[in-house]
Length: 175
Image (tube, rainbow, N blue to C red; front, side):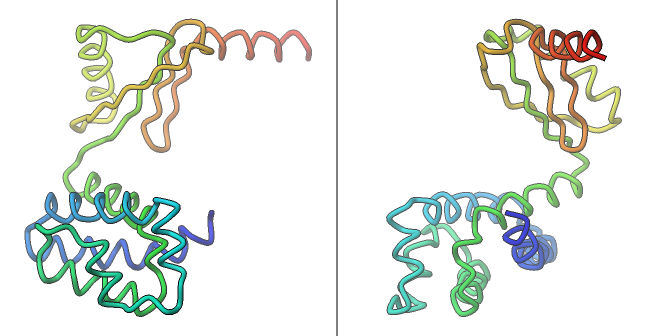
């Protein structure tokens, strides 16, 4: 996994630089997300690793219709370097670079049960205050948390779940 991230990093930076120069962050995000989704499909992944697959066919398969010419050239460079399977990692890193440039923190809130919009707004306000940036929240549900929530905002993880509290209590009692 870390090798894939290391290989993907320069391509993600190049895609970000191109999108920044063109002023097309959102279209590049959409195109990369589409291409990454297609490339992650096991059937397509097997096809991409076939040495007989023509570079142009690979680009045509992975490029969304709405993608610009520069995105097509980007995919062609990836195809030539045999890096198309890295598209999911490239898309993820591109989104991180875009969020940093737009001063947005992306957070995932995983809770034991679905949170109300009032609760999500309170979490969003608290995170905005903590990070001093806009916050985009995605939600997930994990019943094994028993109660509470876990907030994952990049390098910061806040575990306010009952499962986490019980685990910390167990560790404290064992020591």
